[in-house]
Amino acid sequence: MYIPNTPWTWAFVAVTSVQAAIVLAFESYSFAKFQLALYGNYTSNEYSRTIPTFLTLYIFAFIYQLILVWDALRLKNTIQVIGLCIFEGPLLIYAAIQLDQIKDAVNNLGGFIHMDVWTMTRPYLVAIPCIIALFGCAMSAIAWKLYDEFAWTIYKHISADLRMKRRYLTFQIYIALLKFDFFFFLGFTIQFVVIVVKKKDIEFSLTLAAIPVTIIILLMAWFFTIRENKAGMVAIIFLYIAALAYFLFKLVRMYQPSRERFYIPVRRSLTTFAVITVILILLTIINACMCTNNFNKGLKRHITKQTFESEDEKSNMTEMPNLAHGPVSSRMVID
Image (cartoon, rainbow, N blue to C red; front, top):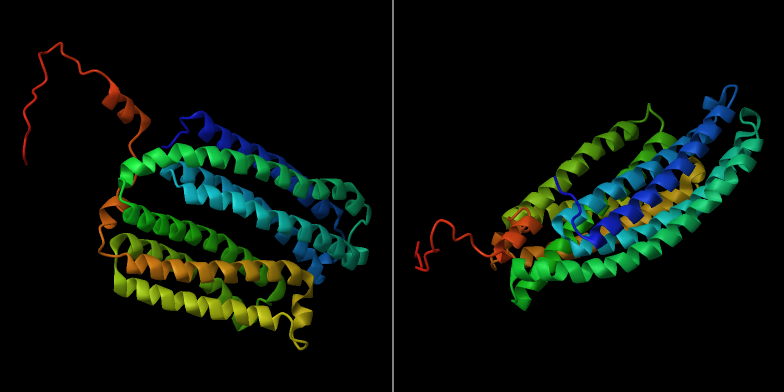
């Protein structure tokens, strides 16, 4: 199991962990206060589902971020580290949207919630965007140092071939995009299923079925890329285009006069997730095409290596050989 082994990798883990701990504590406190403040037949009000959904999704976001931090440092993936810094932006936007939507939910719950709960939790909800902004700046500063630190490892892994380094960079961007695609698709789907769609609707079952299908598609996208399977990648790109059409359809539907009443409780957050997901899918399609174009050009042997050389191995390479059992043979062996 990977353990950070340099000051800057430890610093990145520490900053993201402290941020997650503080935000999770504030979100958990707010979640508990809202749940305890509800009374009566509150389940009949659709706004009663918005608060648990917002807060639970936000909690998942920071847990998922910590997983991606560990994964990025394990793989020495500079692109994913940069992506995690950019990820702070949507988290900051969602925190601001969450603040307004929770206030609206409390006001619309009316006789089903103690109104003083908003006064009790508001300071914590206001503090969350400030915390994210502060820690996002710290993460960006550390990411700059990690960029220099990982550059040497990547140089040894890929060699000085600039064309090969560009292909490897495209591959890293593509894999990082797949990981962020998963979160935003899941975030959109959870909000849509829990708040918008009724359980008796066929759309409810179809949307739930789309979750495992999406996971399989993303896993197959990764598999076809590392195996350089062109036919598989072409099929995946067509599925991306279908997903793009789906999210554009949902985005337009949210603002249709005949349907907008179903989306009002979560329209702002759903719009945010849909727009970000559309942008990510477009970037994923572009990078998928670039990766496919790079097939059979020598990159496969580099990306099939699961891990880089460990620090212990590197130190052993620089140590003087043990001559206690005689001199080391200088003969060259040809396999």
